[in-house]
Length: 141
Image (cartoon, rainbow, N blue to C red; front, side, top):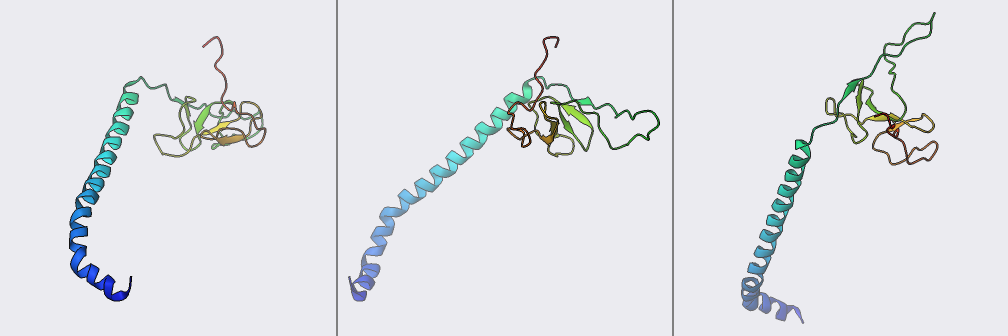
């Protein structure tokens, strides 16, 4: 096709091509938008279902007890191994929590195996490699 033929096609046939393609393009975009709204509604409704469950308790961490003769560090937390906690608010969370709802910070956890402090959202400990970073519930619970 040469330039003259292309210019004639634009002048004579582009209108009919646009009239043919435009409805399909419009329905496609509207369909994608409706799908986006539907998926967004379903995600919000799932959050609502999860919010109706009874939340697990959030406990305050006890202050760290200093040995006799030493000054107590006011910023140190006495977090047990394998329990998610917020270092900013000094709150202890259940194993399913990943973020602090008070300050929106990442929760930390001391690895149940080696004691290395890692994020609660991590899948495994970077120090020892264990995938069981949270403490297992005991039979007494």
